Amino acid sequence: MKALVIGRDAQVDLSDVPAPSRAGECLVRVTVAGICGTDLHMVRGYAAQTGVFGHEFVGVVEETPPEQADWRGRRVVGEINVGCGHCAWCDAGEKEHCPDRTVLGIKQRDGAFAELLMLPIANLHEVPPAVEDEAAVFTEPIAAACRILEQVAVGPDTTVAVIGDGRMGLLTAQVLRSTGARPLVIGRHQEKLAVARQLGLDAMEHTARAGPFDVVVDVSGRAEGLTLALELVRPRGTVVLKSTFHGATPLETWPIVVDEVSVIGSRCGPFAPALDLLTRGAVQTEPLIAGEYSLNEHRQAFDAAKTHLKVLFRM
Amino acid sequence: MKALVIGRDAQVDLSDVPAPSRAGECLVRVTVAGICGTDLHMVRGYAAQTGVFGHEFVGVVEETPPEQADWRGRRVVGEINVGCGHCAWCDAGEKEHCPDRTVLGIKQRDGAFAELLMLPIANLHEVPPAVEDEAAVFTEPIAAACRILEQVAVGPDTTVAVIGDGRMGLLTAQVLRSTGARPLVIGRHQEKLAVARQLGLDAMEHTARAGPFDVVVDVSGRAEGLTLALELVRPRGTVVLKSTFHGATPLETWPIVVDEVSVIGSRCGPFAPALDLLTRGAVQTEPLIAGEYSLNEHRQAFDAAKTHLKVLFRM
Image (cartoon, rainbow over all chains, first blue to last red; front, top):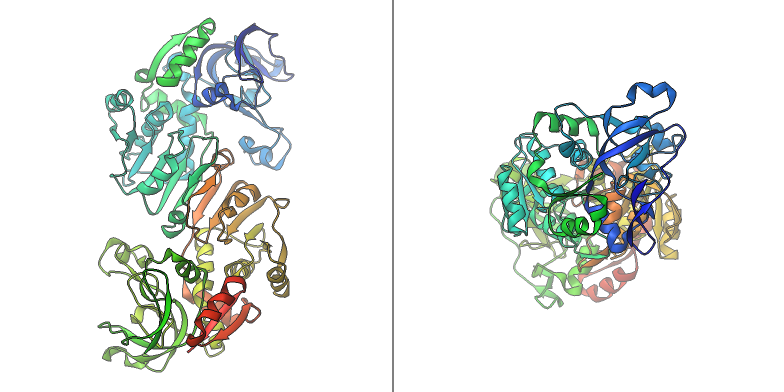
């Protein structure tokens, strides 16, 4: 099958590779896949993975173990972490932190920039008919935003800022808005802030002259995001770190102590509420789509993803 | 009266200054005062305060407003934050975060390295007869350690590490132990780790080869404390930042995200449980006392405090 393969030197090639094969798992034919910040990180050289990458997808189940034959032909999205199945984390249902986990397209498991991928049935979620492929492919990042609501109380009376006007910023702000809160998106790109406003979100240029906020979510993917978040959060407020930034960042930690701020890391989240938000139209994805490419056009696709919002591969 | 005054250049002088005078507050004659890390910070030039400094004390109430006359002659310790009394923070009983607060010996309020100080009656706590002056003077830092128990669930089944073998480290570890937990003190000074062991605490030299722990408290006062804490904490665990470090610290923030760690700032705490721990003998202070000095001997006292555990001034 055709797949995008990333090498040890972070070189990306469209290759002909064997179809994946994992006993006891389901084979999914990928329909649409999305490029996210983690993929761009990997292309910049922060790849733990060599092999097929990509982890945001929607597809159709093609083969299953015999006892799950009723899933064949279903349209699905998939959770990306696969636990070992027999450690304390897996026993607790928290496979995202299993020390021996594999992660679709990120860690020791071939990914979604391919015609076919494999995942266990437990990772798959059927997509409701009302949600089109081009929206369903956003389920994984929307789920990651939903994770915040499992960690921090957010409601109509919560003042919230989202630092970052990229893909995750605009999804996260919509997820937070679904609670009745009215998040402010703070960004650096006029055209992306315009999309935020098109989505009905409050949006303003990067500045510290706002707030203070009960909750500040940093999805900027930038070294200075956390420092700005600490300037914007109220005493005893919460900063949620959503995007990873690699490299040591100079940080003054004393404001965390003096203002008794909680800084909470937040990673993968639950798919069911994400699909529910998509079904209800509470999260709009169409204005975020910056282009669709074939795997052949991967160079143009990654170039576009560096400066634009969501770039999709159609297989 | 005699008092230690810190100037804009962080120069400390023993001066003859007017006794403090604040309408509606109580005048306390200081018996014993303690030097803490914040005082050493100020002496090193990080003083927001000019004037009389020091904030850990035990004393005797000498004058009060007429309606609080029954407090005269009582032996007291005192909370150090005084709120404006009419903001949302003060209304919520959280004067520690009132933006217009004064702080004894730290912010716009003369402090405890003096014969006399003033605080409102609401800040004073009577010291039980069983608690000697030399123990009672530790109430404020023990209360700060008790703050952790208001923020994080700690009990017999919680694995806990305390990074830092100084004054606050040994008090914090004892407070955490009072929950039934068995904290490990991780430090860099053989003689202080020996005091930890004398207190019945587990103690080991600075290393990352321990853990992972559910809760890691950083009271190291060092730039690298937070990085070590992030190495020691388990996924979804909690790092409590207890000591302030001034200056930008290089920090890799991605482990916070990947492991979904909570980093929680922790400052001042409740006096009642601190006095209870002292009364029950659950926190031992005597092994921490490195020396007693008069205000005249302030240079020797601060020199001793730089390398030893708790140094006291007896007025």
